[in-house]
Image (cartoon, rainbow, N blue to C red; front, side, top):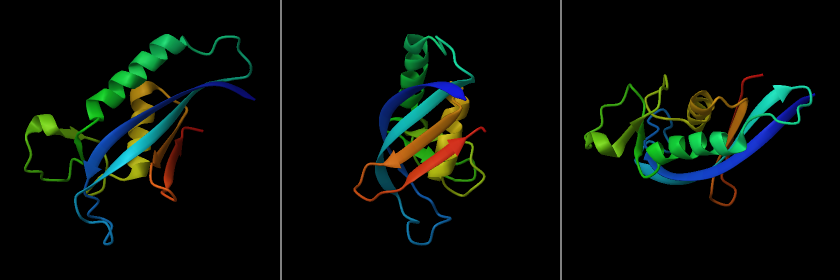
Length: 127
């Protein structure tokens, strides 16, 4: 059994997943993001929700409106327009973005969903 606090947010970003032949072009997404901060067992207080929410909002604000690049990409944009996500692919995947957000905010799990109807969701869990 676990007790969790969920936080929700959104970002609008662009990327070029050159590992995907069907999507290997620059395009953008509005992502809805949910994170779960969890502890084992039951707790009356998992985390200070206000502090966790602030940390989550700050992490998303650094990405919002940016081009998401992996370290393998060579991008001809102003550095202020790029946010580097530590992925091992030539481009940023939804799975990699979910793991990165989990690492930034100390979440047990993260779900990153494209806003389009029928769009995929990407899930990362530390357990």
